[in-house]
Length: 94
Image (cartoon, rainbow, N blue to C red):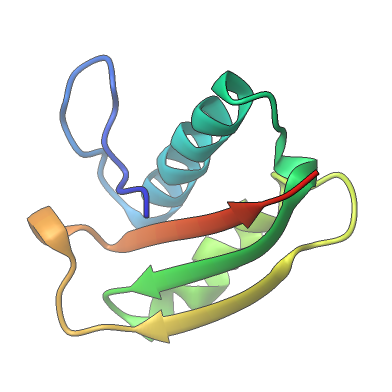
């Protein structure tokens, strides 16, 4: 999965919206390096430190997909690495 760490600074961004965007930007960069796009994502797993952040996370998440949304599950977990508020994992296929 991808944590919301800015690759330029090595630091985690603050807030659920910024963390969701940063995680998805990181995923997009990894996919593009491998010749994929976010449109190739078929499944996502979202881990949240607080399920109450689902609405804010979802509003940002929805902006990243131009086609149909991939299948997705979302869980609240007790802890995420480095105190992150969100971690996102995706599976992409062509």
